[in-house]
Amino acid sequence: MVADFLGIADLGRDGLRLVLDLAEQFRADRSHRSDLAGKTIGLFFEKPSTRTRVSSEVAAVELGAHPVVLGQNEVGLGTRESVADVARVLDRYLDLLAFRVFDHAGLVEIADHSSAPVVNLLSDLEHPCQALADLLTIEQTLPIDGSLVTYVGDGNNVCHSLMVGVAMLGGRVHVVGPAGYEPKAQYLEMAKLLAKSTHGAVHVGTDLSLVDGADVVYTDVWASMGQEADADARAEVFAPYQVDGDLFARAGADAIFLHDLPAHRGEEVTDAVMDHERSRVFDQAENRLHVFKALLVHLLG
Image (cartoon, rainbow, N blue to C red; front, side, top):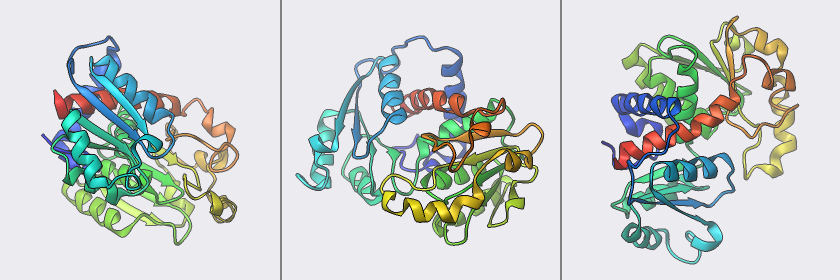
């Protein structure tokens, strides 16, 4: 069992399989349980959140745990108090600490100073809880092993976790976007290494032909939180990579569409694709709840 969940690879292939299988059980049976009765879960949000906050808080409650939710104004991570001191104090109170942060390095520092498990609810480098939901959603339609998942757009935190997670399960990953916006080298190398051991594959490029025949087409916003000042410039660069009906039609005949939300309709994706009969974005959002429940039980149960 892992001590922390800072990145999708932290689970290992066997742990990832266990969490996804448990999440499917939770999806099939939403009834309240007492797996984590008496546990207190800390949920800390340096960045605003809708799906992450609601799904994680509801997950804790439905497992019998008590969630404590705090924002940056209350914690003052690295401003009112050092990151290490915050971690040392919270470790004395809580059974698990989950953080949504701007800087992944701060998350690592928290984990270094906490004996309680630390979970990454989002950082600038990874969004591993989202990746768990992505993988569960794909598996509701088709096995990941051998399937082609094409991510269109910015090689960001969501892309990093998705790419590594799919590679861990033997899938093939294509990442297509404008030059200069590729995934970070450390994650590309990690995904390629994992793919070698699972008979998967990872390819990154700028040509939209990488969408052809895909089983899954995935996109995300062009400007993430904190990049608002560059939104107009990024929109111009990414415009050729909008997932519209024509691009989605290049994927496989039964391909599904995914987006981690919030979506900027008319920018990275059109209404026609968001609302397509093979769009699974709202199943994907629901699955955030089920995978977080499974993760909590895996770490604390």
